[in-house]
Amino acid sequence: MTLQQKVQAQFQAAFGAAPAFIVRAPGRVNLIGEHTDYNDGFVMPLAIARATYIALRPRADGIVKAISLDMRQRRAFALDALQPPTAPAWSDYLGGVAWALQERGYVLKGWDGVISGDVPIGSGLSSSAALELAAARAFYCVSNFEWAAVPMALACQAAENEWLGVNCGIMDQLISAAGIEDRALLIDCRSLELQAVPLPAGTVVVILDTNTRRGLVDSKYNERRQQCEAAARHFGAAALRDVDAGAFAARAQELDPITRARARHVISENARVLNARAAMLANDAETLGKLMIASHISLRDDFEVSSPALDAIVDCANDDPNCFGARMTGAGFGGCAVALVRAAAADSFAERLRACYRSASGHEAAIAITRASRGAETVFP
Ligand code: ADP
Ligand code: MG
Image 1 (tube, rainbow, N blue to C red):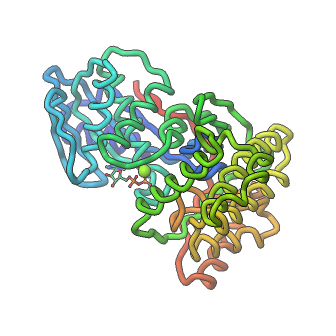
Image 2 (cartoon, helix red, strand yellow):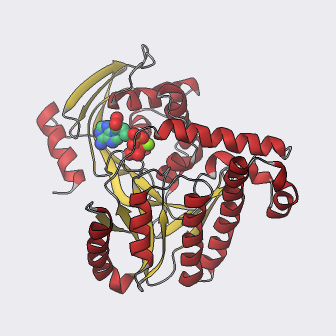
């Protein structure tokens, strides 16, 4: 049974009627451009084939009644009595999206809904953005407003930042809103301009989950953000986006070694994303792979957000002749890596990687060969 069929059947069972709409919004993986989004820089994510689905019907009374099949819980809230959460639960993602949309002047109606997804939770593929964009799409279906990817993504980011208290950039929400089949998207995180970029012919994107998760990621993330802001201030720049390699080299010695290394990562990573775009437009998998390998080294040594498990899985991937390049992806300290692999050899790559990573780390990898999918959409009717 597909996820769409599952939420449809469970909606029928829970509410005794067929849903009026079914919506989906995908998770994402970032090909290159890590920790650049909050520096007003460039990222290159793709929406993945895994997504969160909501089957729903409108309500006339301004109430949202939602069932999460994955959490096995039912929750209800009134759109005119939203309370900021002290300890956020899954339903606060729905409430947060409602709050952010209403703050922006959207007039919302309520709904009954059944939710389920196959984006793994907390592994760095952004199940939170998938849930937020699916919720925004649900409100769009029952209310009467225009859908546009950028304002929807901004509202969902505001929900995550201001309602849930998670300090994320715009990448996750924007790619979940605006993904395009078989394309990665170059996002300029300052202008929010998007450019669809093809993946090299004959390659697939493979997500390598280390099956390790680390605590304290939030505090380390906030510390990195502060270090980047301090470095930008030193250069008199609004953000590290505005500092190029030449300007950095001229004054890098004035920075303390840690701040210098953090800035060097961000500045070099922005350049790698633009070089990656050129390589992809030239259908050059070799160069794209080399940029991914350089990105990992920079994240490991300069930004210091990798982990032994991430290094082990990336090394296993990069040792395989059918892998053009692999790197950690997402905030780091655990979670997933991403690899660009020869499509014809993807299955044997996965098999070898599993064995290599097991003997190097003692953990089992979870491997997903994925394609680039569409962003948030209504799939029924
Ligand atoms: P991720 O890296 O997957 O985005 P987060 O911690 O940011 O991890 O978000 C995960 C949270 O999002 C979950 O704890 C839950 O509250 C919510 N969530 C995501 N997917 C679902 C789902 N299918 N059903 C209910 N809640 C979900
Ligand atoms: Mg998240």
